[in-house]
Image (cartoon, rainbow, N blue to C red; front, side, top):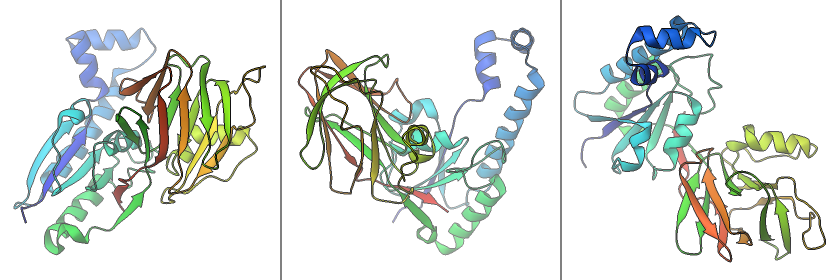
Length: 298
């Protein structure tokens, strides 16, 4: 078996993006000042992320290989079965990376403890460094991980998209979307709504949580539960559309089917609207529990 490779995933800091856009630090400072912000705050965040990355790089075991990839390049980066993925950043960066993984263990590293919820980035940089040293001695297979459920949408032409938090199906501009909904027990309804949210237990702490609260506090799955919660947003009753099938739970083998009755609907995951599928009139979208859970090192 080949030596493990540690793949460090990160994204450009706000300071780096400002310098890309404004060319000089002085120009960036002026831009921030016009918006009531101080560049020292931006510099502080940049420094903390830089230190976290340096800590993780320094902890890579000597016999391991290692590579780095920015968030924007993940879709073009080739991951292998021997990889261990270290995500340095916010919780959302772990969710962004999850769709490209196939069973690789993920160490979520919070470069700013206290600034992030820490749902997915559960380790400090020093804590992650200790984990890597232990993995070098005991073997990477000894990393203790928890499998978090994912959700997958599939179009009838074979296109597929997975997400860690939730999948949205609806109009690109969140206007009224028309479709026919079919639940796992065979009930159907033509609907006009502002879209559907199908969420995992991880996503149940975000977008889905606000919808559930408005509906009276429905119990939602836990992150490791092999179940999904689904909600229809703002279903509009009319002579030809209904609003009786607006929420439910999908068990492990169950499927929610959406047949498009609009010119175009979009499907995207974890809030990444730029990475989406499009479905036209008559196409069927099926949504179910994903087959590739995220292995999050705990």
